[in-house]
Length: 315
Image (cartoon, rainbow, N blue to C red; front, side, top):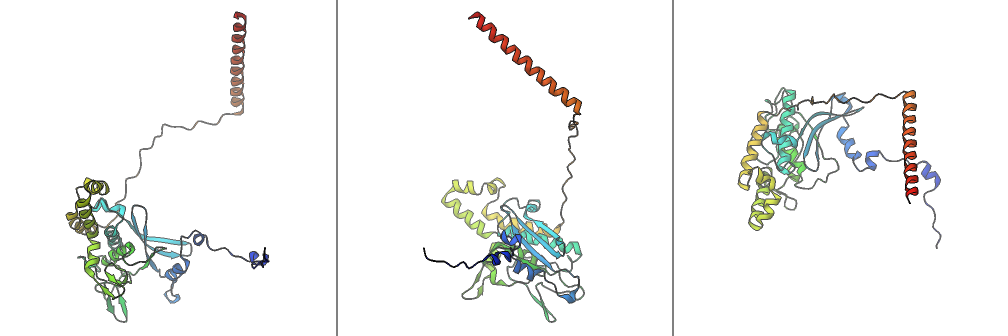
C-alpha cells in the first residue's frame, strides 16, 4: 500500500467548528436568511417582514414573520386547511389552493392593521405582475396612497427550488393580488419562456383558476373512468366536475374578500373528572400488601403439594 500523507491533523480537529444545527439538518439556508432579516441601522427597531410559504403533505401554510433577538415572531398566518370554510373542500395543496391561501393571508393581515380599504388589491384575476412607480421607489401594488404606504414583505422560499411555475409563486401571487407589496417579476410564473423571454399571462391565469386540474380530469375520465373515480374520489363525492372548478374558485376568492378573519375553534370542555389517580401507599401498607402476597403464594404451594401426595397414594 502506498504512503498517504494525513492532511487533517489533530490540530485541525481541535479547531474544527461545527455548523449550526439547522444547517446540519438541512433545514435552514443561513446565507439566504441573513439577507432576509438584516435591517439597515438607520431604520432603528423597525421590523423587516418575510412572507414565508411552506408545504406539508396535504396543506399550504403562509405566514408573515419578523425576526427579533430572542427569535422569530409570527405576525399573521393562514393555512389552506381553512379553505373548506370558504367553499373549497378538496385540492388543498395545488397551485390554485396556494393562490387562495396567499390571498387569504393578505386580506387578513391588511384588515388587522387597517389597510384593507386603502389597498384592496386585484379583485379580478389577471395573472400579470403588478408594479407602480412612486417617486424614486417601485411598489408592487396597483396604486400607492400618499399618506399610508403599502405593507412590504419579502418572499422566503426556505430550501425549496425556485423553478419556473413552482407553487410557491402561486401563493406569492395571491398575496400580491390581495394587496401586499412583495417584490417580484414574471420570470418564475407559469407561462414565462426563458429562451424567448416571453410571458403569456393567460397560462398563469389558467393555473390560478385550476384549468390544469380540469384538463387532467377530462383526459382521465375519457381514458379510464374507473381510475378517474378512484383518483378524483373526493371531487366526485363533493359533486365537483371539470367544468365547475373555475366558478368554484371564483366564489372562493369572493368569500375570502368578504370575511378573511380567523374563526377560533371551540374550547375543549368535555373533560372526564371522574378518574382519580390512586394515592401513594405508606410503608406499613406496602409491607402488609407484600405479606399478604407471600401468604397467598405459600397457601397455593401447600395446596399443590397435597394434591400431588393424594395422586401418589391412589397410584
